[in-house]
Every structure is written in structure tokens, then in C-alpha cells.
Length: 218
Image (cartoon, rainbow, N blue to C red; front, top):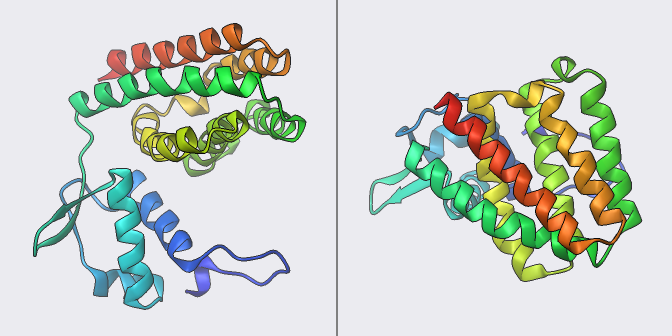
């Protein structure tokens, strides 16, 4: 798996996680189309790994909703219909305000600094970044909020939702517009100020705006 690994002193993530990230990227960018069957042998040859990490990665993506398993037929790339996108926003409206509220009560300077760093990176020149980079950074930013909440149950539920949300974002491509990131500054300020009500309101407003734009382009 030479093109997906590299030397360095930093600990390497489990191979299944690396494979899952690559398969997720190929689904998000349309290389694997909705309804397409993923065949383990072909994927193993493509990525230069054995079938075991492929099989484990497929199970991860099934749990995240990127793949639909079919008994004795394998796994197929899921589709994101307007109805499923609406369902996703309903879940975001329930979880993201709660995550922001809890994060405001457990402020982490390191997490907040990383959030600011992400915003500095993307807002300086969003078109300079690929859509892959922007969606990964957006996912990381929202993951940091849930990690900051300190609620492991909430984080475990929310992370697959955040990753699945990349599908909607990539279809609209709003992440290459500076305005798509500006609301996150208000979220950072509310969390840093230790204002749970305000953080919750800002997060809810952010999801509502995203849902409005999603409906406008669908």
C-alpha cells in the first residue's frame, strides 16, 4: 500500500482506518458511484493490501452509512437522496447544538487553537485547497467540538454523522466560499466564553443555514 503510507516517527493509524479513509474519499469524490458494488479482491489489488483490512474497512463504512450491505451479495455504495439528506439535517439539529453546549462547559484551549488554525488555513484562500482537503478540515473542525464536549457517547454517535455530512457538502461545494466558514468564528467565541446557551444557539443556527442552502440547490 505504498501510495497510502510513508516513513516517519509518528505512530501510524491502523491499516483498516487508512483503508476506510481512502474508500470513503473515493465514494465522496464519485469514483465509486451510488449503487456500485465494492468487490474485495479488486479493492485489495487497487490499494495494494490484503483482503482483511478491506473487509474491516467495509464494515466501518457500512456502520457510517456509506455502504449498504446485501446478504450474500456484498456491499453497495449507498445513495444520498433528498429524503436521506433531510434526515441527516434532523439528526444534526439534535446533536450539534448539544455538542456545542457541552463544549462550552468544558473549554479546551488546545482544541480551540486548532479550530482557529483550521479557519486561518481555509479562509486565507479557500479555492487554493482541494475539495478533499476542505471537507477533511471541516470534518475535523466539527469533530473537535464533540471531542471537547467530553461526552464519549455523544461523540461516538456524532462522528459517523459528521463524516456522512461530507456527502451533502461536496454536492453543493460551498466549502470553497469564505462565507461557509465565517459562522464558525461565532461558535469558537461562544465556546471560549463559556456560554452554553449562546454556543447552542450558534450551532443550531449554523445547521439551519446549511439546511436552507442544501434545499436551495437540491
